[in-house]
Image (cartoon, rainbow, N blue to C red; front, top):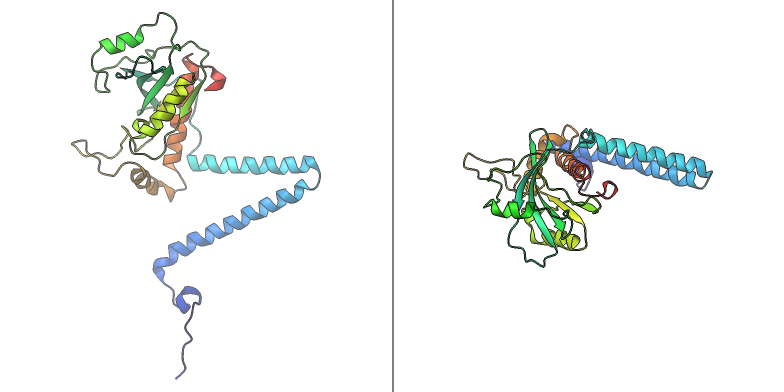
Length: 267
């Protein structure tokens, strides 16, 4: 009788665990990709020591390759005809002190046909044109929650036209645009003179995608919902979470540019 030498040989001492097939497959693909990237980086580094024109061309080609790969994962950039997306103005947020230095407006932006993103717009004091009474109209309309019928496309009050703006992209907090730390950043930017647009990402804030008949979430918000939606598409090489964020941010920038409330180059 011969003894079997035990140790740390491949496949658990020669025995293959079929349950690990997928893991080994993914690991093998990952290692091959990493080797390809290291080879490309080495070529670019070696080209940099030669003619400058050749190095710039290599870097440009690599940038184009990476950009194409990212766009494939996103499902492409959203089409844009240069027009602003439909926006529903839902009134002013009340309760801010008079000396806050900014106001907050509630919006719903249709980032794609049938896709609505809830958002808060922070405007610094003085951004509105002289004589604009929209804030007073919003307060006199009663409860300015999203359930109240709001004014439709074109009702978003215009700003002065020369105020720089930023789109604030929320992190993974379940409350999204209502998370106190995010609100503090937006408020500070607004007090510094910037118009700030903060949106609820998919699966956070007011944009929960899996609800029962009573409106209760079937999937936990935040990263749990991101994963639930993402796993259904990752095997196809798509990233719905990244694509959704990119589309929402892009359409938000179009909204700020096209409505004349900010400098186009600053949005």
